[in-house]
Image (cartoon, rainbow, N blue to C red; front, side, top):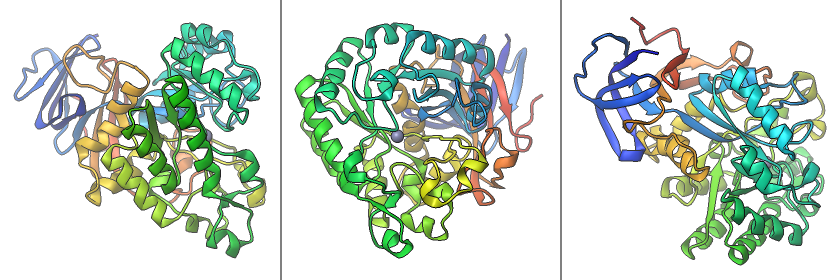
Length: 431
Ligand SMILES: [Zn+2]
């Protein structure tokens, strides 16, 4: 591998609070350094005029469907969609078939990813066998096999004693437990937020309290065990207050929010588009406002996509029958940039939440442009206007409420370990 010089961009590196014009030099897969007027001698040159140069994004929450549901996505398509969206590392949830509750499955995912994925794949192992919430997995062995966290995402471990044990054992693995906080009894058959919109549409509602009661429980258990509790896809403003109090009292409680919960409300469901059915559901404009403020303030640490591909025929059914979830990898940046345009986050702080913070939460290398780091780098044009067409995207699935929408901001190029793996055709020249 040779030298690559990325020239004349806006360097954004949250790990060193760097926001400055300059160049980035890469050699043999590592970052050599940043600065102005770096020598291009014997280097390939990438012109980044007008673009941001940032560390590769890290998605701590995606469903890549392999093994078992490759008709929705696999590590090849998911890895390509990831780098097209600027994600150089992706943590994938355990609800595959078979479930990633055994080191052989973790190893299988890592082997397949090594061969087939352009993005680096970081498996999240199940916390309980078969995601059934009853018997703990062999967490230490799974950790040794390469699991970066533990989660039964998709369901809550309703048995509080089992949850306590999971949190207890996680402290031995030094990896977070990621919770999908939703009381399944209180949720019942709810498919959208319980409120005026669910009443109007005549759809069963899922109250915010279903999320809040489980977050409250899990925070108590985090206090009991000292574990690192990470709360996935926070959707309710009330949850933010619980998380804030837990953090203020010094607990290891962290949280993520999705681009869709930051920008859409339950009113997006008024047309019965099944692509707006997600778990947890889209909430109200008050919740969106509180989530945005919490992300800006740092009460919520990271943006995570919850990329959840489903086949078209699975979504073309009655709203109540559609599986929850939407695509996220290829739209996360453009959707999240809305917060920058509205002045809630600076560009540097947005990149911190897409890259540097998730790296820290999962204890991954990355999220930095410091000399010596792996050369996982993204070039972003924050102004580029484009129309999102999932059929032209890299995911195998098309379930996005943003299909056909005009987006502003796009990833131009993605570099993994010094190798240019994705290059948007306009805007950047390789010489
Ligand atoms: Zn979930």
